[in-house]
Structure formats: structure tokens, C-alpha cells
Length: 176
Image: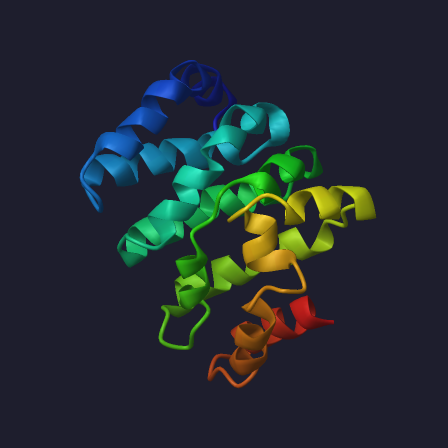
């Protein structure tokens, strides 16, 4: 979390995002680019530069290796801890297949970060008007993970019996 590095990195965010999008999936280049974004997203100061990248990050989750998933989730967790970018996050397109990660076969490192991300999302409370608007946006993160029609709740209930106590605790926190 070097502030001077962040000032330099922010200048190259569009190029870094393009590298992530255009590089081979699971490449060292993608991983390095995500590490840069993780550094940039640690503080709220430059997170607004990444709010348009949420769809890309969510799509990476479902096609990448564990190392890339962990790094992607670090960025998403950082972004979701900032209420100022939450509206953009919940409007982002999300592949429905992201729900498949909420499974006991998913790596605990990935699952724990994914649950932290969802916990941050669940802490956000839209007004009734905003929720209605989001329900009309097809495939947005709100519909996939937060709306009462989402299949996430059932998947979380099943994770209450996960062998890792830390995961059980995260799930319980989200469900209560």
C-alpha cells in the first residue's frame, strides 16, 4: 500500500484493465495486473477508477485459477467496502455461474473472500425505488446475489455445514 505507487498506477488503469481483458486466462500477466489493481484499491482514494471494471472482474471469477480468483476477490472486497462505489458494483453485469462458486468444493481461500464480498454487499441497503430499478436490469449483480429471487440464499444455507469453522461463521454472519 504505497501511496506513491498508487499515484503512478492510477495513470495506467485503462491499460491495466485492457491487459487483464486481452491476456490469456490465468496468465502471469493477468495475475500481475490484478496485483496492481489490488494495490490501487486498498484505499478509497482511487477506487472510483475501478468501478467500471466490476463486470470484467466477476467474469474472471468463473473462468480462472484459484490464484487469479483470490487476487480478483481481493480487488472486489476492497471495492465493496466503499459505500461510494456500491451502486456501481450492484449494477454490474454478473454471470449467473458465479453462484456455482458457493460450494464446499470451492477452495476455502476463494470461498472465504467470496463470502466477505457478499457480506459487504448484503450490508448495502437500497431504497425500494432503487431495488425496483435494479430488478429491471437483467443479469446485474443485484439480481444474481442480492434479490430475494436469487439462488444464493439456498447455497449459503448449505455452506453452514462446511467443515471450516471460519466459513461457517462468515455464512452465519451473512444470513443473520
